[in-house]
Image (tube, rainbow, N blue to C red):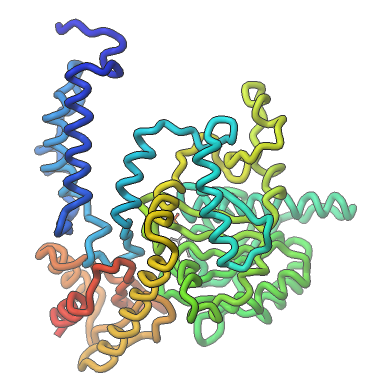
Length: 460
Ligand SMILES: *Cc1c(COP(=O)(O)O)cnc(C)c1O
């Protein structure tokens, strides 16, 4: 039995010094990989064989634990920042942002309150205010970085329902038997998930031939459901296709009826930073709340969603947690990020984006996002011109959906598995209108036209 003392893990001893240095050295190496390995998952059985028994009474030591992570566990995780990772929505954190994420970890900042995290919260707010201006929101808009788009959408909708309840009470109207949120059938699954958590109903309005939710479709649903509707959600870039709803039309109807207007731009709203794309996003300025995920197209590491309210004060009654031990925080007019979303303790998860933006400037962001849009256009034209491939729809943003003529789901799956097995790329089949399709989601500026045509070649 080795002798232990309570402060052993925290003391600045030779041992802890080595542990910190070894970890940071590994982080440095990973951050500076010239070629990120794509890697792939491993079966539970293989992991059991190679990686079990790391948790022991005495500990296995930092060296062995790092080696286990580097040699077994990390290679069993697909690298979402690999340029050939084109499934779902890839991540492509800038080197500055991922390095600064380590600083956030080393700094033990409590990002929930101004009293504890003023400096960090100030810097995060600088980013949120910049985004709010870009989205055309009036001064006074503000918000909080939450874990992801799912939590962002949930938090916004909770605020929306709270506001609707208050309005009903104020107007002397009874609350509806069931509250309703309206979105398109193409809206992200997190809206239905939020509705389930909130125990409210989702009513979907039909989309037009281009897959867009329009004002007239929303108006018809509002005619039918009236005061039961507490929010209308428009999507600024669907996840599967990158389709941007008719935000101006939907927003105008929501405004006219006095219903909360939420814009889910988790993936696509970043494209609004590109000047020539702005017409697509007209109407975002009407939003009562918007979200965009920095861990998607703003080149920040997992995980962060910027949730911005037109009137942040409206979120306070919905989200401020009351408890005796919190009284010292809640009695003050301070800007407390915890009061704006469904969370209390929070990592200052906006800081990696703040640092990278401060380092590189906003123009670099605009240019890097535009690169992805241009590359999507180019590869879509290439697909349209190749025999045996058909484009399902022209890309609006940076998602390209197409078919390999004559293939069934099993063909796509076998092809996808082989591509990953050979460590060329990670492209999983998606589906559209009940048909399997292939989908390339482009985020990384390291994804090249040649890499993409190399993938197309394997479909011949
Ligand atoms: C990704 C996405 C979400 C969910 O965001 P998470 O960060 O994965 O929770 C919500 N809406 C849209 C449109 C998305 O693309």
